[in-house]
Length: 79
Image (cartoon, rainbow, N blue to C red):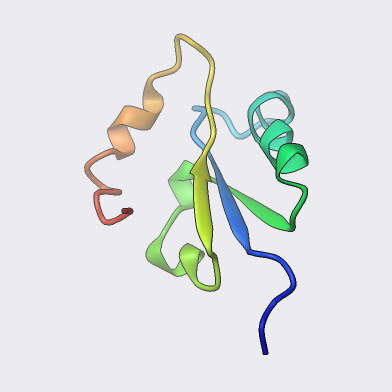
C-alpha cells in the first residue's frame, strides 16, 4: 500500500530544544513542507529514527550556535 504523502523528518540542530528554537527553525520548515512531518532534536537522532522516512531535513540554528558540530562525526552514517 503506497502512502499519499512522503514522510519527512526535520532535525532540530539548535543547542536547545526549547519552544523558541522550534518555532523559529523547525516549525517554519514544517509549515513550508505542507506534508506530514516529524521533528526530533539532533541529540536524539538514531538510525531507527529514519525508519519509514523518505527524507531528512536538518534545520538551521542561531548564528552563534555551533553545538551541532559535536554531532558531525557521530552522524556520519546519514547520507
